[in-house]
Length: 390
Image (tube, rainbow, N blue to C red):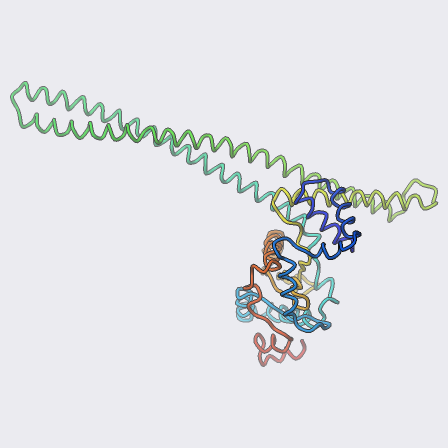
């Protein structure tokens, strides 16, 4: 089994069991080596293997290239692109045609795996999760402050009504003493209204006080949770950065031949051991980040298409070969700022969508299909002379 698949399977196992990465990796390797292990490895939870097999049965005949599939939303974006951005549209169509023609033989700079971007996406997701917790804490604190202000307002209202009640009682008494029954009746009416309002305010006050108490408790819990999450995410991010730096340093030392051995091959073995340990540490930390975020492993098979490469055209398309023989377009980032700043979040969202697709839960993802480049060009570039060169 390829190393990258072993690493992905080990990370997934760590996320499910919480065991150390090294133990998870040993278990994965053992399972693959056991009789029938390869078949067991193909079984995915929730019927994913069955869904993938069913999808594969509908795949086009195997060939050097790919068929193309996309959602209605992606189709709408592609249809509008020619009018909205006539410079970018030919680049996108040319890239899609090349992908369909060349298939798996394509690589950098036009097509690249998102595997190396996954830890970056996880770290940004940790930050977003912290910000969401802070926002919930802020909302709870605002609610508590609003409840406190309402308590003060009710208390002030009761005090004012009690003052008015005392004045009305005095006015009624003086009117009766002076023999002015009509004025006394008016004062009595106002007195009854004041008493009713006071009673209503006093009935409302305990509920508002209780709401403030609950909001205060919620704020304390949310604050503790946000603080704990902040510490956890910073530790994970710092650990990953340190392990990544260690790996780069060991690789540089090995590449420059700066070991302290006597040239008998032990330097190379030592360097490989150090790099292997650093790589395992990176995989373990990645699995811990996935576990913290509730992610079910990395986006295995998620690729990036870069129209206009090697130049940065400001468009990045995320796709996967799903089912076999079909390039399924999942997401697009359009615009220089969006293509860079939102890429990690798009990788995270696309990984989640890809899992749903493989589980047979998102049939709408392949609402539009194209068996060959001719059908794609006929829809998006009919009669375009430039299509001849595609």
